[in-house]
Length: 162
Image 1 (cartoon, helix red, strand yellow):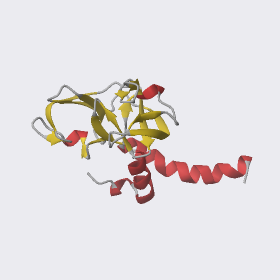
Image 2 (cartoon, one colour; image 1 turned 90 degrees about the vertical axis):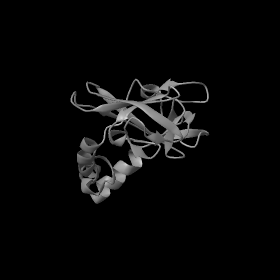
Image 3 (cartoon, one colour; image 1 turned 90 degrees about the horizontal axis):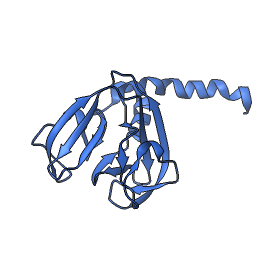
């Protein structure tokens, strides 16, 4: 299939995903992810770049997704006792735990949460799919949401697990 013959199949594949995006946001585009060469804004990362993966080793970025955000979308800044900060949407997982579920005193990935602040007003967000399905921000392991969004699109948003 080529040209116009692709439009209907692409729409049929894409439309279920549109509702999933409303359930998930990602990282504001200004957030820096760890790379072997130092922090880099997620907004400037491209497929093929090397970042520090979820497991702490250099991995390649397989996909990057960028989204427009509503001014009302909530993002969370989670601060850890070692000074690390991670800024993600509430559905995003930090060390396997959704940001919106974290509270002061919780322990995630061997780090104690000392602050959780919610804000809105971001214009764009991004997420990365890497060779190990995640990345690090300030040394903290952060899960990619791309595979989970795909599963939710296939099973329906109601199938999202907390």
